[in-house]
Image (tube, rainbow, N blue to C red; front, side, top):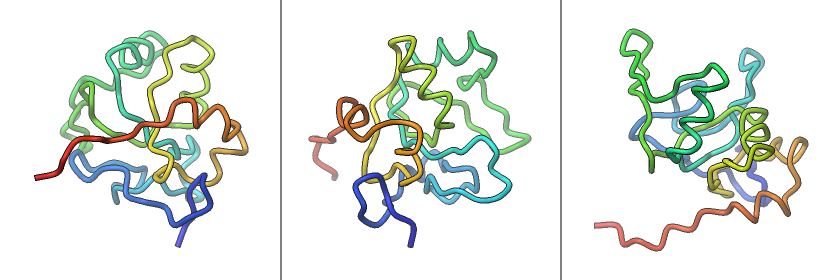
Length: 125
């Protein structure tokens, strides 16, 4: 099993919408994922605007490729470099540490990631 940035088993990022480069719900890596979709982020409006400005519109659905379009609050496996760019522009979304692939810490320190840690305190019914 793949590991997360905390060194434990990688958790599912999101299955609704189904995320991950391989659409498994997990931010795993593979030889054909050149973008390294390894950061499990909780999408914000600021991030969606930033991403669109740099050429990657994530809010528009593309059903032909199974992409639902993202809304604030959705969890999604982002490219690690895109998250770093957003961090540098002060619009990085929070991250779910237990669902971020261990390889993320090759690009971002665990200390920085912890500053953006998302904690879900809501009850699940």
